[in-house]
Image (cartoon, rainbow, N blue to C red; front, side, top):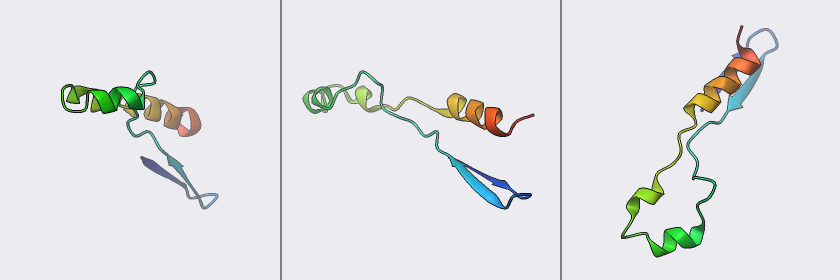
Length: 60
């Protein structure tokens, strides 16, 4: 998460780029393989996407 404060406008904006589950992952798959395949519980990092969004909005 990134909190950006614009001191000139006295406004704050939050950019949320925490990890997320893979798009193709379904709840049923997690329930079936919870104990045998714990690697499916890994989140997809969002750091590059979040920094890109911050640059697009506030970068120079």
